[in-house]
Image 1 (tube, rainbow, N blue to C red):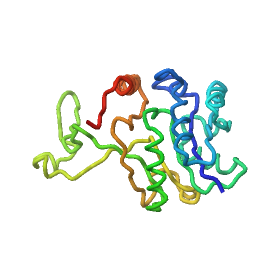
Image 2 (cartoon, rainbow, N blue to C red; image 1 turned 90 degrees about the horizontal axis):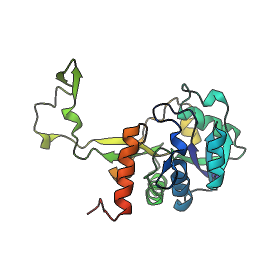
Image 3 (cartoon, rainbow, N blue to C red; image 1 turned 180 degrees about the vertical axis):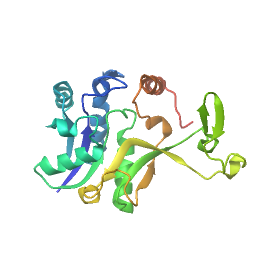
Image 4 (tube, helix red, strand yellow; image 1 turned 30 degrees about the vertical axis):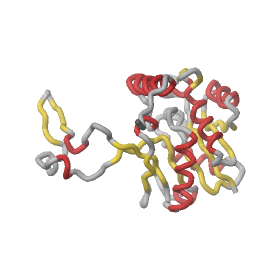
Length: 231
């Protein structure tokens, strides 16, 4: 009966090549997710699933277990649900609950993981996904732009006062709790009854592009030099 931290880290990232082992704040990006999982105390096992020998070597150096996966669950068509199904089917032990902690969210920390574990245990939702506030951005003001011409994405809301807008949040892939039973019949992480767990926006950055990487590096640098987003 195992609580599993599952860190999916394939080698074939396109928009930011080799992002999972890219140096970030003094260590491979993967290492920050392993540390958050280990320091949280929420897991019996911390497993990196990968198709890449360099990533596997980094994971072992970070004291995580490694599960090598075949090409069928490592190409561009494979989803995170496919990765979960493969892991549960081949790991050799009973997984009671698991948490996806992608390496491209290195600012998420052990405190966030612990808090989400507590919420998942107490609320008992089918799955739990980390979310962040939109901050200064107001999604209801979004515009489509085609040939420089703007048209509202949310025509019903664009003429309303902003103080009337309901609260909306932005999903962050930093933390995703579920059970094998919940995902068994699913092809998506967005299952019926999915609940959100709010983490600070500056710890929920998903790094998929060079611009994302620059933003996360700036945030990390600011925090390391004493800046407090909470103040």
